[in-house]
Length: 273
Ligand code: ACO
Image (cartoon, rainbow, N blue to C red; front, top):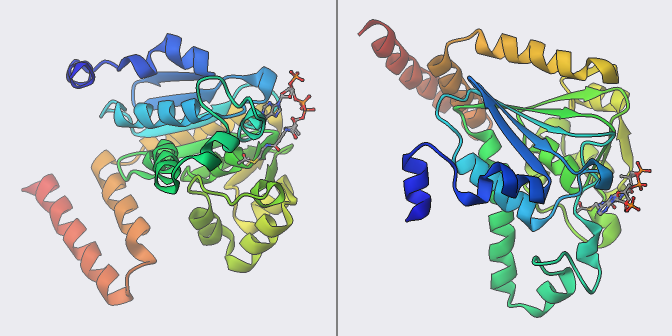
């Protein structure tokens, strides 16, 4: 109820207040049509917890309608060193449990918890927004998957992507496997995940993981340039085009042509009707 009221007011629920986000190690800022989510625990290399993911989900749920571009970035030398390694200890992360505790819970309960965590990543693909990951330094495990959950990746030349989960006995479960396969193909995705090797900037660019590679000091400017380009197109046409592009792989050429016609008819009506 309070949550619904907060949303009606256009404000944020307690879960995404600046103070709560700071406790979790996140910042969220909106400037006109651009929102920025910053992983802000640089002293722990922006390690992520279940609280990070539920806060990300809440940010997505409460994203102001005017926002067209969402930038996801990390403070400090690394974008994100992945899941907080305290999850692997008996003590776990205070208030959030541990993998040993999860192993004792019902499968369905833990699967549900994973679904909730995934909600923190999935909203970044909404057609109404374009999400950009600005990635420097390490993007490991959950950090790599967060970068993969964005539409575009602009990276610094010191970037180090690593899907470490299989080396730790886990699978990547934070929505990263599908975009990885779509970006680099099945063979390369198998290579990257099942060796848990590091992908550096030159390879990231070559295999389509990154849209552009810039010197570390130029990352912010490169992101700003991309934002300017993205905001130069028509908002509704951009959302309709993203819907079309997102659906293209699952449709036949004939089905895609029909979908193009439907979207275009709606555009013409909106523009000239
Ligand atoms: N969880 C918790 N704390 C972390 C994590 C993490 N994932 N990564 C780094 N930290 C902490 C370190 O313990 C250290 O804390 P301390 O100063 O209190 O000792 C601090 O962050 C800095 O870490 P360093 O290792 O000193 O930083 P450096 O820049 O030399 O190395 C690197 C960075 C390569 C990312 C290294 O920290 C590392 O390998 N981290 C673990 C990566 C990992 O295995 N993540 C899990 C992936 S799987 C998944 O996400 C599901």
